[in-house]
Length: 122
Length: 107
Image (cartoon, rainbow over all chains, first blue to last red):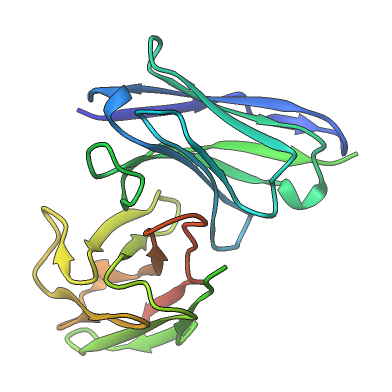
């Protein structure tokens, strides 16, 4: 059974930093791309970042480029998102999501974690 | 970047009605289009990928069509358990943008 468990969220001041983690199990982690998707309270889904399973290529939404960094440790089956220079508009639940298709980022997302809440406020 | 526009933003229909949601891409994306269902308080669930392929376990009353820039999600006979917000998403390349969502309610 595929499981994705996020952690690391919390309350942080504007300009601060957080590191989110997503522990994965139930599939061969390094064979699949992984993504972060966020959802602000009462709002829609926003794709934030993705990383390939094979060569570690990374991708970012314009809204977070230069501030957020995605990474993965295939030996620990864990996905990360480093959030720097946080703004009030980054407040959201952050979900990790697994790419459905083997060895390609051109894939929908078939499994989602429950998410971790990041609140940016003074 | 390609923008994804859904319509309507919300709808109310009766149980048994046929419901159609439209998603338009600002540029062609071939058939790299997915539909998700998000029930209140739950994580999104993949319904359809490649514009028209039903994900395993999804009821056959859901169907998708389209290619290029115009896509449709159809619920052939709306059920009470279909109350949710539905999102389209392009996934051919980054950014893997979602539409703004369509909230479906029962009349």
